Amino acid sequence: MGDWLLLDRETFRPRRLLQRKSLFKRRAAGTGRKLQLIAANVDTLFIVSSCNQDFNTARLERYLALAREAEVTPVIVLTKADLTDLPEDFARAAAKLLPGLLVEVLDARDPDSVACLADWCARGETVALVGSSGVGKSTLINTLSGANRIATQSIREDDDKGRHTTSARVLHRLPAGGWLLDTPGMRELQLTDVKTGLEEVFADVVVLARMCRFADCRHEAEPGCAVLAAVDAGTLDAERLKRWRKLAAEEARNTENLAERRARDRAFGKMVKGVMRDKRQQDGE
Image 1 (cartoon, rainbow, N blue to C red):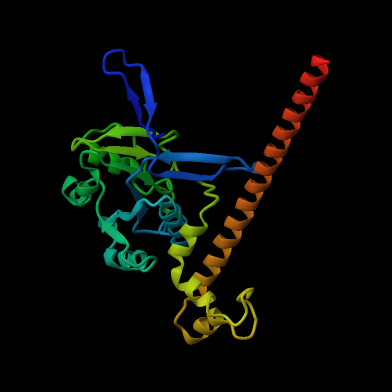
Image 2 (tube, rainbow, N blue to C red):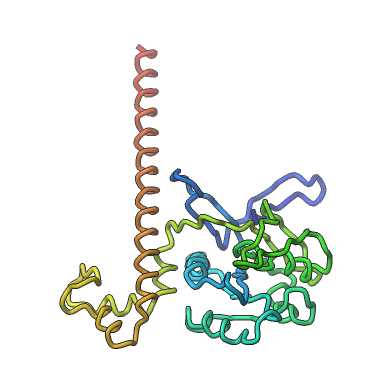
């Protein structure tokens, strides 16, 4: 969703599909290797989390990697600020994930509180929302659009987990002239072809890795490892290193699987063409 198609002013027939300026994609959920396109031509990605137990650093880093790979501006939107006495603690934790990262803390039900997002929702702008169920995406959309278009549900009190409200991607027109793309909660956000995005999100780790004694250092027990030295010195968080290892391994595995499938498809296509060519030659004889 998000492609722009030029229509003839009089006949309304399609004339030209405009070139995409951004594209979000992921490895489809499940055990298959298919690549799933999520959204195109997005200007800003609202990464929605909440000031409660749902706040998950690893999940935010996944979304940030997607945004940076697609060259889309990420904005962390922290909802349910009214339910905690220290919303600034959540904001600081989010801001540390990426230098210069924009973080907004708000009450999704309050139009005055949500007004801080207005600049990204103006005419000619397209915004997409991502985040787990129960963080207040539907409530935020209702407030931004000025209408109760989407039903909302309460979260579970024991773990602050939400229930799925949105089941399909929907494009909403905003009063200021912008567009807002709502995406359902993605339980299996598998990263594929986002190496550049990961390197930007974990730039501190990548810079250290380049300083290791050995180019193929695995940052586990090798001598002269600058990454492990930084962990020992307290300048690099050990948990952040673990998250980088996990995401980098996942991205490499999924991208390799996708490349293998593409190679098989190309080989099969060549085989079919060869068979058809031989058949035409035999028919010609």
